[in-house]
Every structure is written in structure tokens, then in C-alpha cells.
Length: 116
Image (cartoon, rainbow, N blue to C red):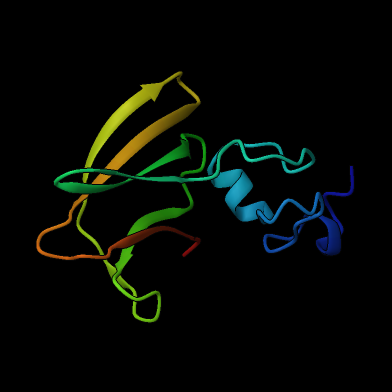
């Protein structure tokens, strides 16, 4: 494995070309060498909420997860979701983050993963 080569193992690299970079693969506890949609956050509506279900690697203590919301995809703001643990196997936790729809006719959510 080429863990010392930033062109292969850098945080923003997507060496398996599945559209998910290494930082996100690490944070969601998915394999960066396998293509596929496992670990991709899933957006649903459960009125009165918009819901984003995502995986969290419990060993990834140096990353920050936040949920952002938008009505237009142009302006994103930090949401204050109610989080519910959907499952936890000791290494990966699946979380349902619920954000009230309120009077919005359109609301999108996205998962933001960063390292301080």
C-alpha cells in the first residue's frame, strides 16, 4: 500500500474513483480501495423533518461532523439537528440527523466532514 504517497493516500484523493475522497471514506469507516455507495449519506423526508442518515467511524476522533441545510443549494447554513443513533457495532455508528422542515417548501441537507 502507498500510504506515504500523498497522490494516492492524501485526504482529498479519490483513488478508487467512486466520487468519495479518502477523508470521507475514513470518517465514515468505508474502504477507500473499493468503489461503491456504501457509506454515502442518505437524504430522506420523514415529515415534519428532513433526515440525513450517515455513518460515523468511532475511531475517527480527529474529524468533525456537521449537518448543513439549504433551500437553494447556493447558501448553506449550519443546521441544528436532532440526532438518533440508528445502529452501533462498536466501530461504526449510523446516525439519523433530523432537521425540522418548518414552513420550507424545499430543504436539502449535506454532511460536512472536516479536520481541525
